[in-house]
Amino acid sequence: MACTSASFFMKLLLVICVIISAAISVSAGNVKQEFDITWGDGRGKILDNGELLTLSLDKASGSGFQSKNEYLFGKIDMQLKLVPGNSAGTVTAYYLSSQGPTHDEIDFEFLGNLSGDPYTVHTNVFTQGKGNREQQFHLWFDPTADFHTYSILWNPERIIFSVDGTPIREFKNSESIGVPFPKSQPMRIYSSLWNADDWATRGGLVKTDWTQAPFTASYRKYNADACVWSSSSASSSCSSSTNSNSNNGDEWLSQELDSTSRERLKWVQRNYMIYNYCTDTKRFPQGLPPECNVS
Image (cartoon, rainbow, N blue to C red; front, side):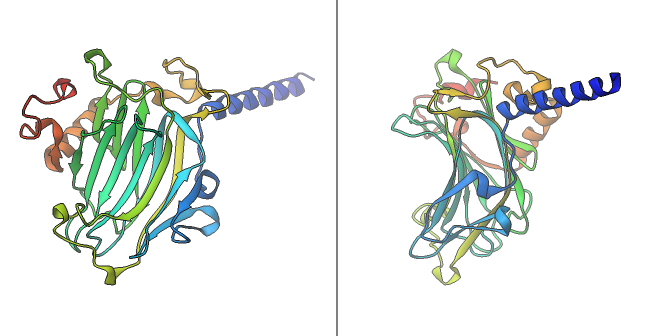
């Protein structure tokens, strides 16, 4: 009888833990369950029993998808394999965004290039409709040869962009000095593959070579530990508290860079950053944006 009782309570505890975890996080490798292809007239495809999603671009149109869920804070991971070969003029965008003229947005954009030349990873953060916070990087590997994981950590204190677990950028909450921070508008995940040869490659000097079309980018192994937003109740699946509770799997809600990660961030920015708005004094002759002075 005691063994039966103990077994029952262990099972009950397991069920409770699963329910709590599900309320705080969404984890899914199956892209079909998590995303809708929203445009492209068949150029976006879900393959391999929902495990692989591809977007294609030709001269007539690009394509795109969006998440079924909206989120208010989360840690988002997706594996991407970018357009190979001569991808000049193309942009593969992967980002979080809300809607409206005062929208918030957290951007990864991958700017194509001529064969053999490196991709440019373009990042930006919009708050209340205002962006102009670009940082750009090259990568330390060929992003077209295999899949790599691109991550966005978004919690109430910071946004961290990472590639294969290596942080490349941190945008801190600087509301204390008057800089808005995205924390009240739920966002969906979007991705698109489109032609931007008026600016994407060498400022528009290199145009898209349509003889190379169709151009294709691939996506797999999506994972979101995130607060799912319910529009009907105007609330998220997470507590309003920002305190971490390791038993509930929401450590990311208060996650910050440790000393090792901060050294890796410095390594990337020292060796692979090619543009930083925070050092562009010609662009901001009246003074750099205030968040640029935050250590």
